[in-house]
Image (cartoon, rainbow over all chains, first blue to last red; front, side, top):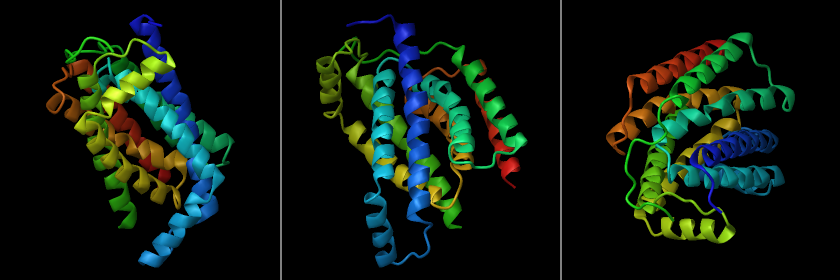
Length: 140
Length: 124
């Protein structure tokens, strides 16, 4: 199945914007339940690692991050990295919304303003051509 | 100090890893078939490119640094701060991948920096 470039670009950016923030939020929730890093001895780091890998939330977060990474790799097969990177920054807003409403984390108004400006920057970048280099092969 | 080192690893190692993955995918070529077989074939080609493995290694370092930071910082602070990697990524795209970064693209990146600065001010 082949889809026109603009459509598939939007689809994969959308997948990245969903999978990435949800994955990050799940990882955050998982790490909060695991607890903060309290020591730096090998035993303490190993114990923290074991506790981290036994968390179902962490594994769910990793699954979402794998979904994000797959979408990311596919879109990079035709679009510039310097275009994809900022275009996917809309996820900062998603992260703040998830953090605020799901994890009940405080988000100050100035941070919301910062996120809004980041999104404006993303919009400006998004209006430039998404591909400026010739890839070594045409299609897979 | 630990927080600073982890943030540095998230940004530098993470961005370098992404640039390596982007280089690998440029070598694979445009994916146009989104069937399970088509996607598997694309990934099958990608895993034969050395840049992908270097990229995954560097991204893993960035990822575990992210996990470390998330154990004591809020996600809505951590993720926006890592937006500094946009500058590194744009520079890398130009210098390492040969992409044409126009004045408009840089203007967008500058707005991102301003946004990140506000996010940091909001934290403190």
